[in-house]
Length: 548
Image 1 (cartoon, rainbow, N blue to C red):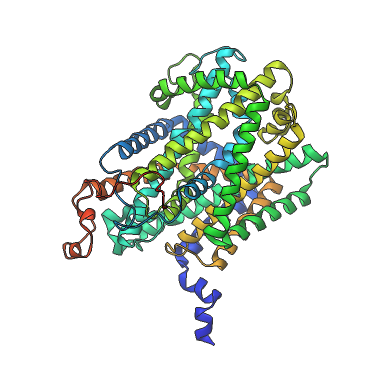
Image 2 (tube, rainbow, N blue to C red):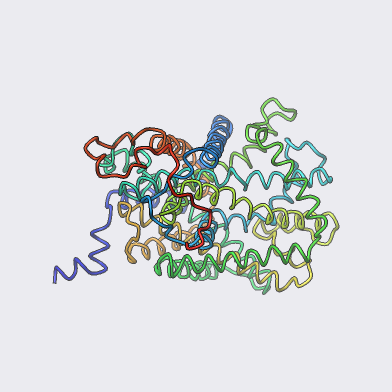
């Protein structure tokens, strides 16, 4: 009987569990949640105070750290290390390029892209960035507004994920290192010491950041879903309805993650991308096409031209003083901290699906291709929102002031031809992107709490899915989502440092003749390309091999 139990589902769950990371990570998250539930006002005030200190005293750090990572990814794309394989020399990619890109994009910030797409540009159109310096609701303000959405959701937003993913994938698929965040410190502590206190502390912090990030996503996008139901049906959704809706979404993403990557996440990601493209193209054609192209093209040029200046802009010393710095803190630094706080689970998920790819393929797909898809979305949604607001066909700003950012998309689509159909498609898109972001991060939680298992047990994934869903429901009903979001963003500070360590870890792997942790007696057991990583591999791979 004991033998049967040890090989059954429950036995596998117990055997694979990293008890320290699981228990400590969950305990810290639970303590934070209890604080938000029992004393929400006090918790919110404390979190807001810490965030204010971060953006006023350390905002420059987030800007500098992100720019360094962007420069490093540029080097990886165009430099000599791009052909290094994340796996054996002759190993083929585990997933086809379309599947790889669909999963990578859906798991990243796609849920946030859908949430903020109709809202952010019209915000900046009304409350103009000091960097743009234009009169509110002017044509210059419109271009500057879209320019800033490109900046906040473009190259910089995707960079930290890729930088975190690359060393984890490299050490995991070339040296059998565990798939977990602490693997980035392998060059300094050695593979045999990745169960030490420092490694455990990094993984525990990653669990907390992931729980906060996933629950925040469920809270924000879940509220968008609930507003959509109220908008389309006219029926008010109370606390019981909120719990029922979040429970349904939780069942959906838990089922998806329990089916595994190929049967669950991959198939849903394909559906996401098709629907995403359909909504984008339909809005572009049915909306103010000429204005979208005009504003979007000019904004893209300004984004490229001003990228370096925007990357270092803090507003310090500018006319307007503290108000200018407040704008930068409320938007750019807020976003940078948020992206850093998401690096544990997005980076880990990208590492999981990147086996057999080259460094260049991961960097180009994760940063350039993802930005290439994001820019048309924000140009279309932002341009349409601004046009409708300016022309008086939809008062989106008033709706946002009443319902919050979650309500921005529904008046936008309602004002277009086929508005009812577009509204329904948008509601479905909100749901599916929420599910894919949640199931990929739940998978990452499974990997973090099992010592780096590529395929955590079904029980592990179901437990995390149920806990995340219950947490999101509790926080939405008690009003603690904003506080948890602030707590999760605070973890962006430590992970900005860990992301830079990941870049240095990649340099240690590729720039030295052999990785620092490799013993001389181990050299005979590995391939030549590991010891001469600075030279391109013998085979040259395209972004999408024909026989992938």
